[in-house]
Image (cartoon, rainbow, N blue to C red; front, side, top):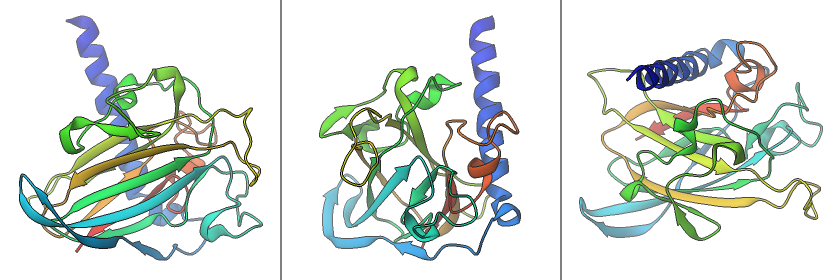
Length: 228
């Protein structure tokens, strides 16, 4: 029981830290906000919730900021880890959203193994290089993609979190980055609302238990998720 309570406490603290830093992203922006990446709707799909639009997003995570909207010089913080091509995402309401992340970064042991597991996706699974999974070893996490909202009676509550398997840093592709692991997952959206997503792997600059720097800045390891 004591072990369970300790794990629960650290889970709450970790989520609270992530929410707090993402909410504060507007204050901590190192440069103008990125443009919005609008999901591509490719027809409809039959689901247990009926026939819904099927929207797709593709993201990539990198060990630096030389990709995405920062430009080839990396912008203000070229050594910060980052997601691209954008971190402001927009999807349709009442749809099935499928996100594919190409994960080019290495990893270490995540501080909270809750985030080494898949949460909130369709059937509770994701795909890693085409194979279904529900969790990965905690010492192989590169980043996470974690979506949540501010508790509010005015919009649906959403929580999705998927671990992104660390890339093998010894196998480098033509672009100079490790050959990525491809992680794909799907989830449903409800009514319109504004949500936030971030990485829950503490890969920041050493401040705030490594949740500072890139971890707390939109355009790097955090962003918005608008449902319209």
